[in-house]
Length: 244
Image (cartoon, rainbow, N blue to C red):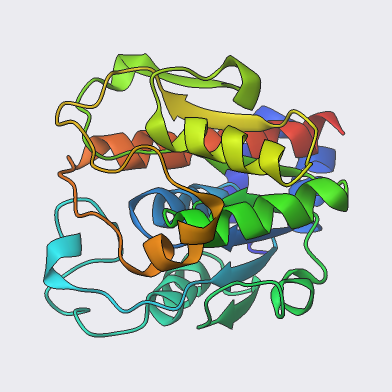
């Protein structure tokens, strides 16, 4: 790590803090509007190891909210562009990338070596699969709930899943984890702002989770909300590392 690059951070957290950050591996699952900003903040804070997981490519419709999305990057895999950004910020970083959909068959392989996980998945099926795995394995993680269909950043909260309200995604997550017998509270970032446009099919059966994961309802979004939520998740991870 080039000391000059992170000089201002070291003034804040000290040499020991920088060593903790450099020695930590963070997995970011989902590199959309939330995950890409979270990864960016973690890289600029001196995290030394990354596992990036996202199957998707950058599309023109991502430009309004995703830090990776430029006209020059359209059509390119998100994991590749994020890897390039991290290494351009910190050439000494160790960045592993997987252009895959996380599922029960591959999650153990993909997450091996991660000290912390940032769940930035926006599809319900993969999100439930990941959360079930993380809770059962008592892994350290933070989960980010729905960022779309809202405008008010002052209603974004860092709390625990049991405290969340007015978030349709958080409600479904709680319901489906409970149906699977998964108990346990966990940290999450969520918005208490009521969705500006009513979402369709709020009540979903567990059997429909996987289908809905691949056929998501398209909802509106604004530039700053996913960024704020991703940055709050990064803040939680960084503070947890420094306090650990």
